[in-house]
Image (tube, rainbow, N blue to C red):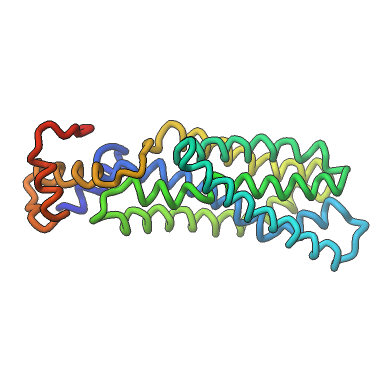
Length: 248
């Protein structure tokens, strides 16, 4: 009964469990784009630069992937400066905008490699960092592992789908410049959708995790569940304190 209630509220998108839809969908958009564009980086580069040898094209793959690290570092700094939700939204939109600009500059190969790496870096700057953080901070401690595991499972399912459909999409759109540009535009569309989901649906949480624990225990007590073993004495006092503000 308890888990049915939590799952039901998660599907509806409010209350305890209401964090499921937004975080899971944002994670799905992130994984659908970042996995194929990272795994197939050498293949993408080879289609843009047919004059290079196979060894040279494979070598450019790690060069592009080196941009992941600075993206993570910048994202880690931004999340405490402007907020988790804001960092995720900013990164998603920058990711989408830059991806749309990669098509027109694909004839300048060195510039394309740098911007392709920056494209991947934006993906790690925000959703790559913030998905894990928002999934863990948006749920109460007793359910945190379940919530995060569910959101991660949804994301990884879309990562598998994106990886499987990427090559057929590439082949169907053609190997020319316009065909490859459309591949990036598809990725941009998912990134923009992820940014809108992050801004509209995901709750704006901070580093105070105790408030969510108190709200969860209060929710259990309101629905007739025994909470003597949930959260310890501190949460017991907080729930009893009527001056503590609860977002119902």
